[in-house]
Image (cartoon, rainbow, N blue to C red):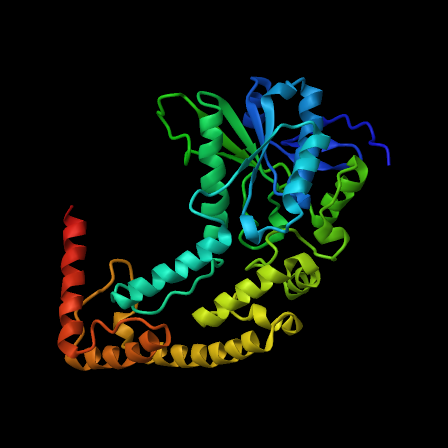
Length: 383
């Protein structure tokens, strides 16, 4: 399909383009673009970031913004990504005529991060630095899969690449995607990686031009603008592209991913983490249950044991003294001797399940350890 001529016009705080929906924009972003800011497209390979790049590029061309001051950047999540994502991202950037920078977390990919989190959690539990065992997975309240793996990698990289520049980072976020995104602003200053008063004078902003678009709008833009779609949509029927297996994914999308043969090895690796940790991939869903036919008999048996161990762990932790549960500045106080006895008894089977040392196996050891932790907390607050 030929790409139609799209001439933007400004309407009361938004940008209208014939044939595709309006782009959300404000006067500050318009002024910054006209002043020649660098435009950095955060490109994931998914439909939203691709549509944002193509639609915004049309507007920038109309304003006469130089293409030499635009670029795309992609955070590669390693094994967690669909194998075809890097090539898809490179193809989309090339079609758009954008130079592409690919960045990665130096300490390992997202699967490494999940494994690392559980290993760190076990060490902390063994050292009685946490009251409950901590699972490996990111969650709605702890989105390190986005903050650490994407924003905290892309932001510093852009600041290093463009020191002293005025930068607008274009994102493909939409308000109708989720409750958490319903209130996203059209634009805002981002001081995380170019802090106020920085020596080089770098200034960064975030722009969400698709804030008011729907998924149907995005797919329509792909058709009208000739933007290729990732195989997750075209070949496997996913409603969105993220990781091969996303903690926010619907059952439909998890099954779609599992149906793609190249995703099988990572599926089994993540199910193995479920089995070792006794924590399901999503709060109410075991990834193992999505495609049992992809698992061998040994791994299936490990999952059965993990589910039983999870139920026992949750029963044990629920029965631990409620007044000592985690709060900021934990622990809040030293337990009574009776509470210390309960803590000793509760920790023993969990430590054994994960082959951890029972370093605080008596009432006196528990009381001494809580005293140490409270003293360390007091010193930290005083400092």
